[in-house]
Image (cartoon, rainbow, N blue to C red; front, side, top):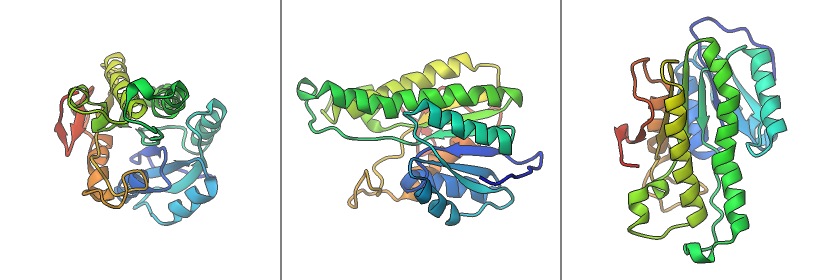
Length: 242
């Protein structure tokens, strides 16, 4: 990464899994608003290509090799953020996996659960733990956890779907609630959002929603005013049931 000097009005955003799909669109939208962007990508070459496809109105865009399941990788990314910006204002936990081979919880391999939770739950937890001290320094932070309707408890009573993925997203929602409770009074707002069924590599070509539609609520939550909501679960900028 290159050295960069910020102006006081700029925000710095880290988006995980940002080399494609919803994550890349979130990065593009935040950059268009003048924020400096760090694109987290497990494959650095793909992250650099993605970074070149977007441009910030006044900040900078750079890629960082980031595996959310690897604490050393997270530490390296945050050391680079500190060296280049000395701050972090926005964290979007977008990276996620769906590797279930069955919709039946009685048939789900425990190893599938462990692997899924490492990326979808423990990854966001690690990122939040690294980000919050930097956010507290400036009394400002916006944390957005990209969840799914699969993690909604009400929906689980109606239909079975990818148990490891569903449980991981329900746990991510729970993490959102307890972190928002801890962050009360700090101007660090923590929310979850559901992008809907989006045309991405994960969602497939038959999904009804575009990446722009899928990213919109995350961008809105990432740019909330100081009196914005916290500890909520949103879709299309409207609060939904857990």
